[in-house]
Image (cartoon, each protein chain N blue to C red):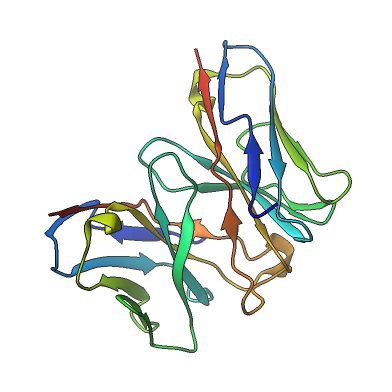
Length: 117
Length: 115
């Protein structure tokens, strides 16, 4: 596809439910990131994949958050037993190469807005 | 870890005037500083970036300056137009390949260009 695609665009969950958010990165992009963006704030790093390897998960707020990218392309962010504080926009981003290669900017999807009631 | 502060949080300018947004960062190892524009309901879109070996970069009506000594960088938009109205984020990253050179973002500046 032309850009990073995320689904669903909106998700409403009752407190305690599990949710799964999907990210389709740009084809061939090696690096994939998940960010969490609370209302009125900047995106905050959650986790990073290089191909299928999850190299950094230091930003995941609790063990209720889990991410995977089993075949090095599509990624899923799963949140178990959702809480109200999980309400945010979850952004996925991808980059062609690992690291800061020249002409390899980070491309963001439009995000999934999660509302926990 | 890295901390990025951004000011102002809101900025209202008259069409045709200039807008300036300033950011400071804490980690002297940071070497890449992109700026993103985010419109309502969309993801951040890269508008310009600068690396630590460069002091200034321009692209048409937008420019970014970097002062490594003071650890601050700024975005300048000249001849503002209504379509420049959006939220702008600065970010910083350092060359840490194991972390994918992850970006740390500022809190954002909501820019409103009044016609």
